[in-house]
Length: 184
Image (tube, rainbow, N blue to C red):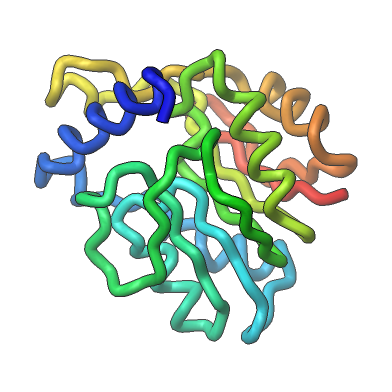
C-alpha cells in the first residue's frame, strides 16, 4: 500500500472501532433501488466497493448474487460475506456484472478520485450504482479527522462519472445526496 492508502486505512480502522459509526448503513438503504435500477438477477456477480460492515453485501447475497465485498478496514465487517481487504485505488484484478458503491466516493482523497473510478470501471462489465453524499460528514469528530474528503455537488459528480462511463442516469441530486446508475 502507498502512504496515503496506509494513512486512510488506519483512519477507518479507528472510526470502525466506534459503535456510533456502525449504527447506520447508508448503503443498506439503497440496495433495493440498486437491484432494480441495474436489472440485477440471481446468479449474477456484484462487487460492493467500500463494503464497510457488509450489510449491503449480505442483502445482495440473500437475493442470489455472487458478491465480493471490498474494503480497506477489515474490522468494519460484521457479516459473513466473501471479503477482500484492499484500498479501492489498489484493488486486485476481479470482474463482476455489477458494481455497488454507496457512501464511499465522498470519503476518497481528492487526488485519488480518478484512480478509484478508473479501478471500478475496469472491474464492472455492466451497470454500477453510486450513492454519494454531497455534504461534509459529522462522524469524523469522533476521531478528530474529517471523513468526507471529496465533497462536491451532484452536478460535479455527474460530470466526473461521465469521464469514465458513456451513460450516467441521475436518480437523485439534492443538497444531501447524489445517486446515479452508470453504464457504457
